[in-house]
Length: 317
Length: 246
Image 1 (cartoon, rainbow over the protein chains, first blue to last red):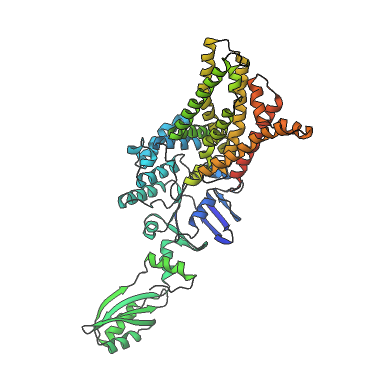
Image 2 (spheres, helix red, strand yellow; image 1 turned 30 degrees about the vertical axis):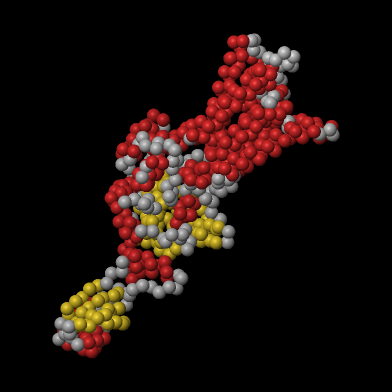
């Protein structure tokens, strides 16, 4: 549905986006992740036809944005970063203007506006002037606008920024619901958000796409080595000798030593499960195994490690 | 066409929601009312030269131009600069509308505000007609002249607004452009060289409005105003077009 091909955007001699390519299939809900200033918004602005890239092109349903930007824009509902609105209009007036602009037929305009007001839960501020609405309401007015013409593709730039926790949950729920019959590309720098809503993630950093895959892939891809934390009820030397003898262990570090027990972190080759071997080794030496945990890399760690990998910074454990 | 109407309507709404509109309209009416009464008083004195008050009112005085130069940029200053500053340009330009529709919508909106500001002055003619015979022909052409010059000036103001991010800067730039245009009239009066005088007569806005006020519709004047408006609209379009794909 969305096909981005080697986009390049330069501001002066700084490359904001350098050769980003990805595809989003029909009905997919994809999270576009990256730290602030990574090039997320620039990429989204190019897709929506607001900015012209220095190289590359975007295809929506096979239509190139470079040739037929107006037709492409008609297929997109876009919520820009910071959600700019006309402060001096009332919410309903604003949506009426946007509906006319987007070519919602006059006959069904009123009905459609009521529908999106209800879907985004902004009915109670419909007759308020936008400047007097709270940030949460404004954000949802922006979302209502994106939905107005019922476009097949939704592009949402940080849709939950500035919302209180209750509104965040509601907005995520709404986006998930929309994803049932829309293709959604949403940007965020909040990982749990992407984890909660999206089936696939794209990670962009310093203008380069560093990861494109499912969240499960991200977990796997990332951790690299398997990590295991174990506790052995034995003196330190005996315990060390025991874990060292386990086949498949590539390294171990002592975490703590107390009350006649020692805790270690063991690492082994990716995909190699050493839990059973560890149990047998302990059993063979008659050392009680009192703790055994598989360490999962959190998405935060994954993200940090992907985005710092390039710059050569230490990968946090 | 639908998008042009929607944008024009939104601009008119926004204009009249802001206190600025009422300041502009009120000061315009107070000042023009004052000028009109001064003109009437002057013309009804014994030994005054004989002229139609409406003709003097249209471009016959300095005040007319001072007000035109100030009003046009104030009407147009918000149109582009505000969108750029508040970021709403992004929502506007990513809606399925063409740049041509954006420019025309804003321009027609500005023109409608301009007409709305001038409309109450029709009352002057009505008041006059109660006390003396009014020749409506020149009054009509006078308004035509005001419309044409307004089309020119508003297009210039629209361009300066699209070219800057700050309303005040847009207004001052527009003001500068209009002063330049008016000073061409002064040049045409001062020049004695027949070659330059011939050329400058084409661009003499002061003379243009006076001619219209006297009931003279000169196609050269019409062509000048319309081509000026066209030039600035084309420049506004280019200013928008510069940033985006086809």
